[in-house]
Length: 233
Image (cartoon, rainbow, N blue to C red; front, top):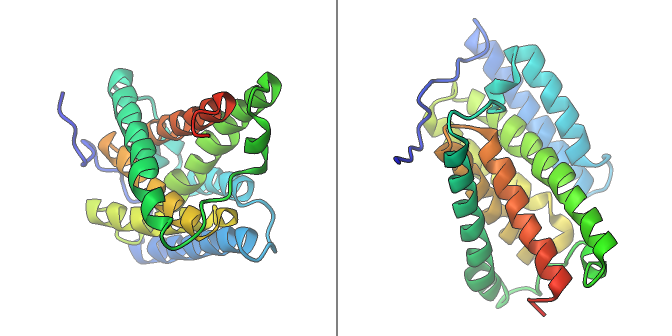
């Protein structure tokens, strides 16, 4: 099985007037950045995931005509998507635990865990609630918002070339890091690198959003199971 970072079918650019479309996409990207920073850093905007998810689905539908433009499409081979997602999730977990956290620990305190994480240990009801939030709000909500919507609009600026997607992954990963501002500096770095891995999974899957959704879900599911059994402690 061959993995390729280039989609087999080029996603068409959405407008007959590229300059207008690129300008509008740049505005949407800047608006998205304002929403992310405005909520997480300055607390002047409602929750960015909900806002970006709704805004993104509407924008892609109205401007592109179909949600498959953001990668929301049925994979040709689900097995390939699962393999990419499992590999990316394993990489993110191992890299975070054995590389990122030790390095950032020299400079900053450990990342602050979400409030619910402290209540998961041995509590089945809280663990199930956490899993529900993981697969709805995080896996679907954040991936639609960041890899689906913001990455697509970032790539629009370069007319959706492969290079523009990779450049967009870097930009969106920085925003994704600030989307976890509450975790502190080490958490921002850790989440930013996680964003790079999620974006890479998206590209390896031929720009298929299911790969990053499953990767995100697998990562956070491991976190819930870890917290429930207290493995890290």
